[in-house]
Length: 587
Ligand SMILES: *[C@@H]1O[C@H](CO)[C@@H](O)[C@H](O)[C@H]1NC(C)=O
Ligand SMILES: *[C@@H]1O[C@H](CO)[C@@H](O)[C@H](O)[C@H]1NC(C)=O
Ligand SMILES: *[C@@H]1O[C@H](CO)[C@@H](O)[C@H](O)[C@H]1NC(C)=O
Ligand SMILES: *[C@@H]1O[C@H](CO)[C@@H](O)[C@H](O)[C@H]1NC(C)=O
Ligand SMILES: *[C@@H]1O[C@H](CO)[C@@H](O)[C@H](O)[C@H]1NC(C)=O
Ligand SMILES: *[C@@H]1O[C@H](CO)[C@@H](O)[C@H](O)[C@H]1NC(C)=O
Ligand SMILES: *[C@@H]1O[C@H](CO)[C@@H](O)[C@H](O)[C@H]1NC(C)=O
Ligand SMILES: *[C@@H]1O[C@H](CO)[C@@H](O)[C@H](O)[C@H]1NC(C)=O
Ligand SMILES: *[C@@H]1O[C@H](CO)[C@@H](O)[C@H](O)[C@H]1NC(C)=O
Ligand SMILES: *[C@@H]1O[C@H](CO)[C@@H](O)[C@H](O)[C@H]1NC(C)=O
Ligand SMILES: *[C@@H]1O[C@H](CO)[C@@H](O)[C@H](O)[C@H]1NC(C)=O
Ligand SMILES: *[C@@H]1O[C@H](CO)[C@@H](O)[C@H](O)[C@H]1NC(C)=O
Image (cartoon, rainbow, N blue to C red; front, side, top):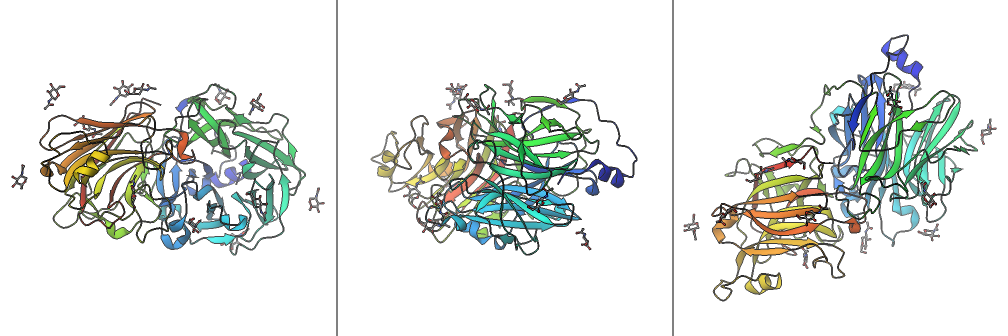
């Protein structure tokens, strides 16, 4: 929802807006890591605060919500989707492109609305059941308790609400583009989801997959701003306007208004934008972008949220500054006075000590719904540890329907190109293939897992173990193993063409209190290391190289896991001192 300046003046009680601040320089991305499809609003009634939300796909809790006073320090104050009962379907989605796509956050008459689409990417489904469009709401975003969703019918995605001057409410959305590309709109009752006849509004300028529409009303025009070109390197933002909400919509002759297509910029895939005005009347745009360069092969950070300045003069089309790593604009003064419990995103240090009586912070996520009994902070006899009970499923498992229990996996997004992650693991696996450790998780078909595992000598050799004394080993012994799972190779589960898995034998006692480490040494290479209690040096087990093959919609989650690899695990894994240190001078 766009806030006309007269409204801001009324709210602040001032006759005129204060002058814009001096330009300052800022660094993109605004919300680093797996935070695509941003939507943001400015809410004067909530103490001049910006609120944003991003897509979360299969991550749970899902739909992270951020609050900011300065458009620089972004605090994750909650997650719209934080109870399985809100959307049970997320527990059984198939594939990494399913789940929550493209939220639109809006504020109207005292209520915050979050409209989005729960996507079931399965060809077996007919087109209508692929898209579950939903409306959440809350009157207090800091309470971190959004409503159960109201569902509405729409054969498409990227739905966004708009309130017309006459009090009627509409949704604009992207019709399933494989059928015919069209931005559509319809009247809706947000309380019941009952909607009116569908209107074709604008097909875009001819780019592939017109999507991510938002409608704004300004200076007697209805503006429809959309993304086109698909979410890859041909992505762009275009805009049309009409005197009538129902059209016809006339395309801006200057389209696209934002893109990095056909450039050599590091920040590529720019599009899927939202536009809003701050308390000084200055305009801003958020959009998604990928730090991949034009080659667009390696981008472990996934699609991130960027900020760019905009100008929107009366009666004119908006002009958006091109997206760069470093930009300038009249940013609000730095202000971290944001209430609520949460995490400042992009902080270089994240140290979890699992203190008794605490819960995991709001930026930690599971893959779909967890079995909460498999995760215990400070269990009896193990204060300051996170106990994980191994799940039947491992991280490669393709869908949520093949086993009775979910995956034992929890982690946080990679928010820095270069980082080091250390954790201490106390795990004494006694069952064949029982495994626990840490992972670089992009999707079920692309993840690198460094763990302690119990293997028979035959399995160890099959896994690449080349050490000696194989003849003398007992039936099972313990190893540090790196698996590099990637769809580069046809046989799922075998190594890709570039990553280097590894396996090292360790003594039984060395699996108690072993340190595991992941270091992103540069923008594409992860090093995996361990240091057993009896050792003074780190040993590099292997390397993982991240690439586009995971489908490119999500981004990296760095997590802890425990699995029986197909059977129920018995032996608990205790993790302590989870320490993530990102290098905030590398972009
Ligand atoms: C997931 O895939 C399985 C196997 O193809 C299928 O039976 C099931 O209906 C799918 N579930 C969803 C929610 O798409
Ligand atoms: C705004 O909300 C109040 C209180 O919920 C309600 O009484 C009023 O009708 C609403 N106004 C509009 C324009 O929707
Ligand atoms: C469903 O979508 C497919 C493409 O994804 C299209 O070929 C087909 O015509 C659609 N079916 C209906 C009934 O719209
Ligand atoms: C706006 O659209 C409505 C519905 O199609 C139509 O009745 C009306 O005449 C249009 N108004 C203008 C100014 O074009
Ligand atoms: C990029 O270049 C291609 C080929 O010239 C052109 O068709 C396309 O429209 C350009 N895209 C943008 C967003 O400028
Ligand atoms: C301030 O930044 C905006 C957005 O980048 C730019 O359009 C404007 O020219 C800048 N103003 C000055 C005085 O540098
Ligand atoms: C392993 O630890 C146990 C219990 O602390 C101890 O009795 C045993 O000697 C240790 N074994 C080795 C090989 O260090
Ligand atoms: C990243 O680091 C690896 C390991 O040191 C090195 O082989 C590779 O060339 C580096 N890549 C880049 C792009 O710097
Ligand atoms: C540890 O590393 C140092 C420096 O590389 C080396 O001199 C030393 O031999 C190593 N110690 C062991 C036990 O591998
Ligand atoms: C995952 O577990 C299955 C058994 O459920 C096993 O067949 C497969 O090898 C495991 N793969 C990986 C990569 O973990
Ligand atoms: C990880 O451990 C290494 C070696 O002990 C240390 O140099 C580094 O600072 C640690 N990093 C983090 C993030 O804990
Ligand atoms: C961060 O990266 C910079 C630039 O490569 C480097 O100089 C610095 O040592 C790094 N800091 C850490 C803590 O690794």
